[in-house]
Length: 402
Length: 232
Image (tube, rainbow over all chains, first blue to last red):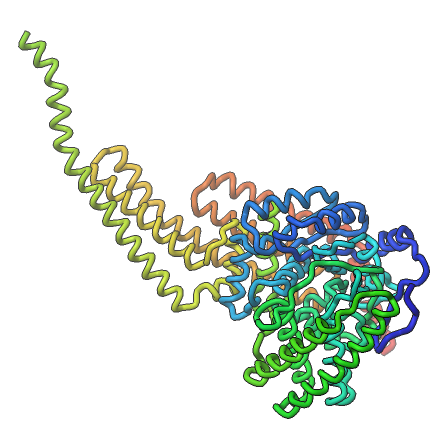
């Protein structure tokens, strides 16, 4: 059982006692009549060859408050798309599968591209963004929930707890992020534990008080892929299409809404999904690429907030980060010891060293070109530039799903 | 016996004579058709280059033409579609000219009818494209005006206006193409008249009280004015 401490400037919703799933679900069913919910599932075809998705679909079959599921499928051929569509058809409510590699959706991307509204490269960012566009176009849902398709420990309570704060008009938050621990015989979540938190705190030390850093530091699991938001946020949100997606989403929430209307919720006692290799030698692969993208996004958001970066700043940051990361490692070592978990200090140190390199690389890229990775334009702008785009997108997805 | 052989050979001779006359015409048709395909291909290429230089695709996206094409489940670039239309149009024209070279009476009639029908297709296409753009523009203007006036059903009103205008345009297009013109005109008149009558009845029934108030207000003002005169 968790404590009830309120972390930072946002609302933290803990899992206290043994909350009844049935009670929460029955309340959501009522609330969702006023605020219909869409669930976005970003997935690659390869995920349909694993077991996690089977468990997720089994659980989703029991959910009674979701208006529509929009599964945005990447790296799939036409035949594989049909296979996924058939697999998803066992869910007894509306499911739309976006075929990102299909000719229709590709033409939508081409239309955006030729109008100077690049949706970026293939990836989770672009895949979720197109799903938001479809939900806006279909106009059926006021709330969007999203979670990954590789969660081995998935149960429908996760979705219920994620949606509840946004759909409940008495809580009325605009955005809710999930948090959880990721523990097996050891602690996982290296990027969150050893990159994000030490990086944000070392930035705070150098920059001083900064609302965005305080906001970011308030999240217990800023890289969690599970969140829920109002559909209006999806209209105004500009997100990166690379691994900076999660931090980019938080930056947009910070920019558009008061922290008092932002929450995080404990959605699971434990969470397990596939693990990325570290790839310490190659900044273009695995966790290293993720860390470079995340660091770049943080730097860019801070620059947009008026923070001035220089070579000297980044040199100090490197040193400060290493100090914070080492201190953090000691804390986790103690935490692992008291819980009887394995703690491989050498592996953790290697990860910290790799992350320090990633920060250095990100700083270098940022100094060379601060506008490096452009953000995907928001849907309001796209609707204004190409008035028929929502009709086109809806037509494309609906035709694919016939 | 000789007579019998003549009876046997005459049709063959006739066929041969006909064949000798037909072959040059057929070759002429094939040459015209092949030339047409080459010309069509060249013009298509020229059109594509021109449209590319003129940023036609982005213009079509912004003007809503791409959205119309997509409604027909066509997912190529608008410029590609224009190129294909031009290509097949020219190929068909040259096929018709080629068929004309065969000098077969029935085909000649069809070909002349086709060429007489061409201007109608052009004008119908023009009416549809311009009409659709104007319908979209008016619908958007109605939407903005209704939203600014705080009208609750602004989107429905704008869509209704757009739908009515499109029906109107389609009726004009069908009339232009001479597709059952009398039925189209009658159907359109009945439908449009029905809508107008429905609106008139709805306004009449719903507006009885408003009309009464206006009339009563008018007569009261008149009486007040008369009273004023008496006081003077």
